[in-house]
Picture (tube, rainbow, N blue to C red):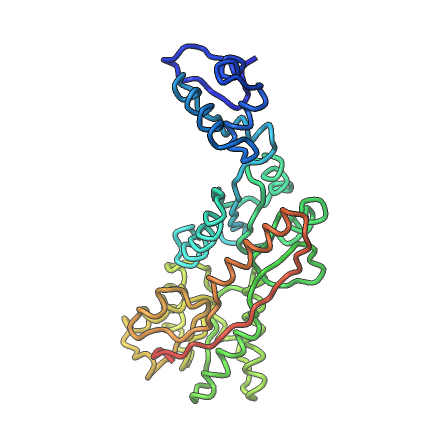
Length: 344
Protein backbone atom coordinates (compact mmCIF):
# COMPACT_ATOMS: atom_id res chain seq x y z
CA UNK A 1 0.00 0.00 0.00
CA UNK A 2 1.25 3.49 -0.71
CA UNK A 3 2.36 5.52 2.29
CA UNK A 4 -0.33 7.83 3.61
CA UNK A 5 2.44 10.41 4.14
CA UNK A 6 3.62 10.59 0.52
CA UNK A 7 2.27 11.81 -2.78
CA UNK A 8 3.74 11.15 -6.19
CA UNK A 9 4.58 13.75 -8.81
CA UNK A 10 2.44 12.95 -11.84
CA UNK A 11 5.36 12.71 -14.23
CA UNK A 12 7.24 10.14 -12.17
CA UNK A 13 6.84 6.36 -11.90
CA UNK A 14 4.69 4.92 -9.16
CA UNK A 15 6.99 4.04 -6.29
CA UNK A 16 5.84 2.42 -3.06
CA UNK A 17 7.23 3.03 0.39
CA UNK A 18 8.33 -0.61 0.42
CA UNK A 19 10.47 0.18 -2.66
CA UNK A 20 12.15 3.09 -0.84
CA UNK A 21 12.72 0.86 2.18
CA UNK A 22 14.24 -1.84 -0.04
CA UNK A 23 16.56 0.63 -1.79
CA UNK A 24 17.70 2.09 1.55
CA UNK A 25 17.93 -1.31 3.23
CA UNK A 26 15.64 -0.34 6.09
CA UNK A 27 12.13 -1.05 7.32
CA UNK A 28 9.01 0.74 6.07
CA UNK A 29 8.49 2.31 9.50
CA UNK A 30 12.02 3.73 9.39
CA UNK A 31 11.25 5.33 6.02
CA UNK A 32 8.05 6.87 7.43
CA UNK A 33 9.89 8.29 10.44
CA UNK A 34 12.76 9.59 8.33
CA UNK A 35 10.43 11.41 5.93
CA UNK A 36 8.67 12.93 8.95
CA UNK A 37 12.02 14.28 10.20
CA UNK A 38 12.10 12.10 13.30
CA UNK A 39 15.39 12.88 15.14
CA UNK A 40 15.58 9.30 16.41
CA UNK A 41 16.67 8.30 12.88
CA UNK A 42 20.37 9.14 12.36
CA UNK A 43 20.79 12.21 10.17
CA UNK A 44 22.88 10.44 7.52
CA UNK A 45 20.20 7.79 7.11
CA UNK A 46 17.43 10.40 7.07
CA UNK A 47 19.24 12.29 4.33
CA UNK A 48 19.69 9.11 2.29
CA UNK A 49 15.99 8.20 2.52
CA UNK A 50 14.87 11.75 1.67
CA UNK A 51 17.19 11.77 -1.35
CA UNK A 52 15.72 8.50 -2.63
CA UNK A 53 12.15 9.84 -2.18
CA UNK A 54 12.97 13.10 -3.93
CA UNK A 55 14.76 11.36 -6.78
CA UNK A 56 11.62 9.36 -7.48
CA UNK A 57 9.32 12.37 -7.27
CA UNK A 58 7.84 11.98 -3.82
CA UNK A 59 7.30 14.72 -1.23
CA UNK A 60 5.88 14.57 2.27
CA UNK A 61 2.11 15.00 2.16
CA UNK A 62 1.58 17.15 5.24
CA UNK A 63 -2.21 17.09 4.94
CA UNK A 64 -2.38 13.31 4.98
CA UNK A 65 0.16 13.13 7.77
CA UNK A 66 -1.75 15.69 9.83
CA UNK A 67 -4.96 13.72 9.39
CA UNK A 68 -3.28 10.51 10.53
CA UNK A 69 -1.50 12.09 13.51
CA UNK A 70 -4.39 14.43 14.42
CA UNK A 71 -1.89 17.28 14.50
CA UNK A 72 -1.86 20.22 12.08
CA UNK A 73 0.98 22.45 13.36
CA UNK A 74 -1.53 25.27 12.85
CA UNK A 75 -3.12 27.73 15.27
CA UNK A 76 -6.53 29.19 14.47
CA UNK A 77 -7.03 32.91 15.10
CA UNK A 78 -10.74 33.77 15.20
CA UNK A 79 -12.32 37.23 15.22
CA UNK A 80 -15.99 36.93 16.24
CA UNK A 81 -17.95 39.98 15.07
CA UNK A 82 -21.56 39.03 15.67
CA UNK A 83 -22.05 42.46 17.27
CA UNK A 84 -20.43 44.39 14.41
CA UNK A 85 -20.56 42.64 11.03
CA UNK A 86 -19.35 45.79 9.26
CA UNK A 87 -16.01 45.85 11.05
CA UNK A 88 -13.19 44.49 8.88
CA UNK A 89 -9.97 42.63 9.56
CA UNK A 90 -8.20 45.63 8.02
CA UNK A 91 -9.23 47.65 11.10
CA UNK A 92 -5.90 48.96 12.49
CA UNK A 93 -6.44 47.29 15.88
CA UNK A 94 -7.05 43.88 14.32
CA UNK A 95 -4.09 44.31 11.97
CA UNK A 96 -1.81 45.03 14.88
CA UNK A 97 -2.93 42.30 17.25
CA UNK A 98 -3.18 39.65 14.50
CA UNK A 99 0.30 40.60 13.32
CA UNK A 100 1.72 40.29 16.81
CA UNK A 101 -0.03 36.95 17.34
CA UNK A 102 1.34 35.72 14.00
CA UNK A 103 4.86 36.72 15.06
CA UNK A 104 4.55 34.68 18.26
CA UNK A 105 2.93 31.68 16.54
CA UNK A 106 5.38 31.46 13.64
CA UNK A 107 8.27 31.82 16.09
CA UNK A 108 7.15 28.43 17.37
CA UNK A 109 7.13 27.00 13.82
CA UNK A 110 3.34 26.88 13.59
CA UNK A 111 1.11 28.20 10.83
CA UNK A 112 -1.73 30.70 11.28
CA UNK A 113 -5.32 30.13 10.12
CA UNK A 114 -7.36 33.37 10.28
CA UNK A 115 -11.15 33.34 10.44
CA UNK A 116 -13.66 36.21 10.80
CA UNK A 117 -16.98 34.95 12.17
CA UNK A 118 -20.17 37.04 11.97
CA UNK A 119 -22.72 34.27 12.50
CA UNK A 120 -24.78 33.94 15.65
CA UNK A 121 -26.05 30.45 14.85
CA UNK A 122 -25.67 27.96 17.73
CA UNK A 123 -22.79 25.54 17.28
CA UNK A 124 -20.56 27.74 15.11
CA UNK A 125 -17.61 27.28 17.45
CA UNK A 126 -18.21 23.54 17.79
CA UNK A 127 -18.08 23.22 14.00
CA UNK A 128 -14.73 25.03 13.85
CA UNK A 129 -13.33 22.75 16.56
CA UNK A 130 -14.70 19.60 14.93
CA UNK A 131 -13.10 20.53 11.58
CA UNK A 132 -9.69 19.70 13.18
CA UNK A 133 -8.00 22.34 11.04
CA UNK A 134 -6.02 23.73 13.98
CA UNK A 135 -4.31 22.39 17.11
CA UNK A 136 -5.55 25.32 19.19
CA UNK A 137 -7.65 28.48 18.94
CA UNK A 138 -7.03 32.12 19.84
CA UNK A 139 -10.22 34.19 19.97
CA UNK A 140 -9.90 37.99 19.62
CA UNK A 141 -12.80 39.49 21.55
CA UNK A 142 -15.91 37.92 23.00
CA UNK A 143 -18.41 39.90 20.90
CA UNK A 144 -21.84 38.64 21.99
CA UNK A 145 -20.60 35.06 22.15
CA UNK A 146 -19.76 34.61 25.84
CA UNK A 147 -22.15 31.68 26.16
CA UNK A 148 -20.82 30.01 23.01
CA UNK A 149 -17.29 30.27 24.41
CA UNK A 150 -18.41 28.93 27.78
CA UNK A 151 -20.25 26.02 26.16
CA UNK A 152 -17.03 24.51 24.77
CA UNK A 153 -14.66 25.51 27.57
CA UNK A 154 -15.22 22.40 29.68
CA UNK A 155 -14.47 19.93 26.89
CA UNK A 156 -12.05 21.85 24.64
CA UNK A 157 -8.96 23.04 26.47
CA UNK A 158 -6.66 24.48 23.76
CA UNK A 159 -8.47 27.83 23.52
CA UNK A 160 -7.56 31.29 24.84
CA UNK A 161 -9.79 34.35 24.52
CA UNK A 162 -8.78 38.02 24.41
CA UNK A 163 -11.44 40.01 26.22
CA UNK A 164 -12.97 41.13 29.49
CA UNK A 165 -13.62 39.15 32.65
CA UNK A 166 -17.28 38.20 32.99
CA UNK A 167 -19.23 36.51 35.78
CA UNK A 168 -19.07 32.75 35.42
CA UNK A 169 -16.63 32.62 32.51
CA UNK A 170 -14.95 29.22 32.33
CA UNK A 171 -12.65 29.77 29.36
CA UNK A 172 -9.05 30.90 29.69
CA UNK A 173 -8.92 34.65 29.18
CA UNK A 174 -6.24 37.28 28.59
CA UNK A 175 -7.00 40.97 28.49
CA UNK A 176 -6.48 44.41 29.97
CA UNK A 177 -8.07 46.38 32.81
CA UNK A 178 -10.77 48.13 30.82
CA UNK A 179 -12.54 49.77 33.77
CA UNK A 180 -9.34 51.26 35.11
CA UNK A 181 -8.45 52.50 31.63
CA UNK A 182 -11.76 54.32 31.32
CA UNK A 183 -11.34 55.82 34.78
CA UNK A 184 -7.79 56.98 34.03
CA UNK A 185 -8.87 58.65 30.79
CA UNK A 186 -11.70 60.61 32.38
CA UNK A 187 -9.69 61.50 35.49
CA UNK A 188 -6.95 62.93 33.27
CA UNK A 189 -9.43 65.05 31.30
CA UNK A 190 -11.07 66.36 34.47
CA UNK A 191 -7.66 67.22 35.93
CA UNK A 192 -7.12 69.35 32.81
CA UNK A 193 -10.28 71.27 33.53
CA UNK A 194 -12.70 69.43 31.24
CA UNK A 195 -16.22 68.88 32.53
CA UNK A 196 -18.34 68.10 29.48
CA UNK A 197 -16.78 64.81 28.43
CA UNK A 198 -18.50 62.82 25.70
CA UNK A 199 -18.22 59.03 25.50
CA UNK A 200 -17.96 57.84 21.88
CA UNK A 201 -18.77 54.19 21.22
CA UNK A 202 -21.21 51.35 21.80
CA UNK A 203 -21.73 49.35 24.99
CA UNK A 204 -22.72 46.06 23.35
CA UNK A 205 -19.61 43.96 23.98
CA UNK A 206 -17.89 43.15 27.30
CA UNK A 207 -14.83 45.36 26.79
CA UNK A 208 -16.98 48.30 25.67
CA UNK A 209 -19.26 47.90 28.70
CA UNK A 210 -16.30 47.96 31.08
CA UNK A 211 -14.69 51.00 29.45
CA UNK A 212 -17.99 52.84 29.76
CA UNK A 213 -18.20 51.80 33.42
CA UNK A 214 -14.72 53.28 33.90
CA UNK A 215 -15.94 56.50 32.25
CA UNK A 216 -18.84 56.68 34.72
CA UNK A 217 -16.52 55.95 37.66
CA UNK A 218 -14.11 58.72 36.64
CA UNK A 219 -16.99 61.21 36.59
CA UNK A 220 -18.32 60.02 39.95
CA UNK A 221 -14.93 60.25 41.66
CA UNK A 222 -14.58 63.88 40.56
CA UNK A 223 -18.14 64.81 41.46
CA UNK A 224 -19.03 65.56 37.85
CA UNK A 225 -22.64 64.78 36.97
CA UNK A 226 -23.27 62.14 34.31
CA UNK A 227 -25.18 63.53 31.32
CA UNK A 228 -26.80 60.93 29.02
CA UNK A 229 -26.74 63.50 26.21
CA UNK A 230 -22.97 63.09 26.16
CA UNK A 231 -23.13 59.35 25.40
CA UNK A 232 -22.65 59.21 21.63
CA UNK A 233 -23.39 55.76 20.18
CA UNK A 234 -21.09 54.71 17.37
CA UNK A 235 -20.29 51.41 15.76
CA UNK A 236 -16.64 50.44 15.56
CA UNK A 237 -16.01 51.73 12.04
CA UNK A 238 -14.53 55.06 11.02
CA UNK A 239 -17.50 55.96 8.85
CA UNK A 240 -19.97 55.52 11.68
CA UNK A 241 -17.74 57.39 14.14
CA UNK A 242 -17.53 60.32 11.74
CA UNK A 243 -21.31 60.47 11.43
CA UNK A 244 -21.69 60.24 15.20
CA UNK A 245 -19.33 63.16 15.86
CA UNK A 246 -20.95 65.23 13.12
CA UNK A 247 -24.31 64.52 14.76
CA UNK A 248 -22.97 65.64 18.14
CA UNK A 249 -21.72 68.89 16.64
CA UNK A 250 -25.02 69.52 14.87
CA UNK A 251 -27.03 68.81 18.04
CA UNK A 252 -25.74 71.87 19.84
CA UNK A 253 -24.86 69.82 22.95
CA UNK A 254 -21.91 71.50 24.64
CA UNK A 255 -18.79 69.37 25.14
CA UNK A 256 -15.12 70.07 25.71
CA UNK A 257 -13.65 66.55 25.52
CA UNK A 258 -14.19 63.15 23.90
CA UNK A 259 -13.23 59.81 25.40
CA UNK A 260 -13.55 57.15 22.70
CA UNK A 261 -13.88 53.40 23.10
CA UNK A 262 -10.86 52.85 20.82
CA UNK A 263 -8.06 54.72 19.10
CA UNK A 264 -9.74 54.16 15.74
CA UNK A 265 -12.83 56.04 16.95
CA UNK A 266 -10.71 58.67 18.71
CA UNK A 267 -8.61 59.37 15.61
CA UNK A 268 -11.79 59.68 13.55
CA UNK A 269 -13.23 62.09 16.12
CA UNK A 270 -10.04 64.14 16.04
CA UNK A 271 -10.06 64.64 12.27
CA UNK A 272 -13.84 65.22 12.17
CA UNK A 273 -13.56 67.93 14.83
CA UNK A 274 -10.72 69.61 12.97
CA UNK A 275 -12.66 69.63 9.71
CA UNK A 276 -15.51 71.32 11.59
CA UNK A 277 -13.14 74.09 12.70
CA UNK A 278 -12.55 72.84 16.23
CA UNK A 279 -9.04 73.04 17.65
CA UNK A 280 -7.68 69.94 19.36
CA UNK A 281 -6.98 70.14 22.27
CA UNK A 282 -7.77 73.83 22.80
CA UNK A 283 -11.50 73.54 22.06
CA UNK A 284 -11.99 69.80 22.48
CA UNK A 285 -9.55 67.34 24.04
CA UNK A 286 -9.54 63.76 22.71
CA UNK A 287 -8.48 60.53 24.44
CA UNK A 288 -8.51 57.05 22.90
CA UNK A 289 -7.91 53.50 24.08
CA UNK A 290 -5.39 50.81 22.94
CA UNK A 291 -2.35 52.87 21.84
CA UNK A 292 -2.14 51.36 18.36
CA UNK A 293 0.85 52.41 16.27
CA UNK A 294 -1.15 55.11 14.44
CA UNK A 295 -1.91 56.93 17.70
CA UNK A 296 1.48 58.60 17.94
CA UNK A 297 1.46 59.71 14.30
CA UNK A 298 -1.77 61.74 14.23
CA UNK A 299 -1.82 65.54 14.25
CA UNK A 300 -1.77 66.23 17.11
CA UNK A 301 -0.52 62.90 18.51
CA UNK A 302 -3.24 61.05 20.41
CA UNK A 303 -3.43 60.79 24.17
CA UNK A 304 -4.62 57.28 24.91
CA UNK A 305 -4.82 54.37 27.30
CA UNK A 306 -2.01 51.99 26.43
CA UNK A 307 -2.70 48.28 26.15
CA UNK A 308 0.57 46.42 25.65
CA UNK A 309 -0.49 44.43 22.59
CA UNK A 310 2.95 42.89 22.12
CA UNK A 311 2.94 41.50 25.65
CA UNK A 312 -0.73 40.57 25.32
CA UNK A 313 -0.10 38.53 22.18
CA UNK A 314 2.84 36.80 23.81
CA UNK A 315 0.74 35.99 26.87
CA UNK A 316 -2.09 34.56 24.77
CA UNK A 317 0.22 32.29 22.80
CA UNK A 318 2.10 31.20 25.92
CA UNK A 319 -1.17 30.32 27.64
CA UNK A 320 -2.40 28.43 24.59
CA UNK A 321 0.73 26.31 24.23
CA UNK A 322 0.63 25.49 27.93
CA UNK A 323 -2.96 24.31 27.52
CA UNK A 324 -2.04 22.32 24.40
CA UNK A 325 0.60 20.58 26.52
CA UNK A 326 -1.97 19.77 29.23
CA UNK A 327 -0.67 22.28 31.79
CA UNK A 328 -2.79 24.67 33.85
CA UNK A 329 -3.14 28.25 32.63
CA UNK A 330 -5.08 30.78 34.70
CA UNK A 331 -6.69 33.83 33.11
CA UNK A 332 -4.55 36.98 33.06
CA UNK A 333 -5.66 40.62 33.17
CA UNK A 334 -2.85 43.11 32.52
CA UNK A 335 -2.63 46.69 33.81
CA UNK A 336 -3.08 49.64 31.46
CA UNK A 337 -1.22 52.94 31.30
CA UNK A 338 -2.21 56.51 30.45
CA UNK A 339 -0.02 57.84 27.63
CA UNK A 340 -0.24 61.65 27.52
CA UNK A 341 0.29 63.24 24.11
CA UNK A 342 -0.80 66.52 22.58
CA UNK A 343 -4.49 65.74 21.91
CA UNK A 344 -5.20 66.05 25.64
